[in-house]
Length: 86
Image 1 (cartoon, rainbow, N blue to C red):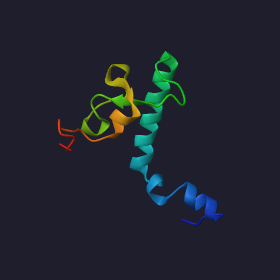
Image 2 (tube, one colour):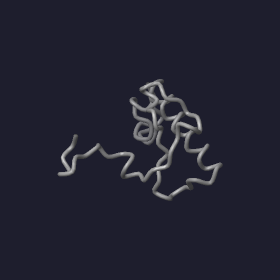
Image 3 (cartoon, rainbow, N blue to C red):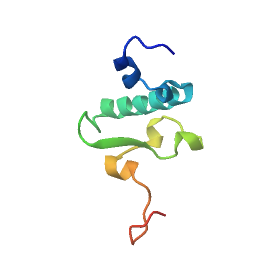
């Protein structure tokens, strides 16, 4: 895909332009907007909107499947009591 300048290439890498990635990002953005309308999250608050049942496992972006968690808890791997990765 031709780029007009180097800034375009750096801003939108080829991976981010794949249809599956765009769809997942759109669902995440939709979930965030839903929780912002309810006042549960706001921009810059360090919180993530998590799908209780992941989209990859058949979950949907509906209010009953969403929860607010800290960014750290949502993005880290599950750990054991000794802090090893499960």
